[in-house]
Image (cartoon, rainbow, N blue to C red):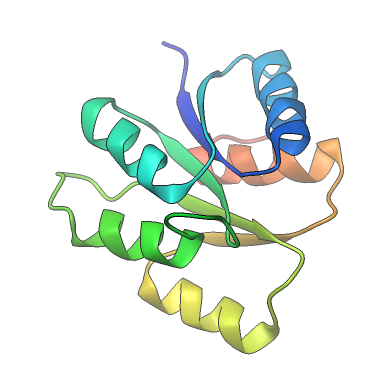
Length: 124
């Protein structure tokens, strides 16, 4: 069964690029332009991984992580953060509140595939 990934970023071009990479890698995906839309999708659907930007309107990545981690679903979902604008201390803080991995922007196709596979528990 194909893995389902939720991609969250307010940068439409980047979101479309991520979607293309994820699709080419054989995964299903949904797109959200902010954390509020992402959380609504998360509640309605089953995802195996969330890839989220940090700086977004309405609900940012930090709020999304906190909201998801406060939700009492059976199994915690891996969350991969992507950002170009946060420092080491903020990354540590985000990992402490429930993010699983951090990938600095800009990243290349191989980086995102590596982290997605890692988040999904796949080799490769």
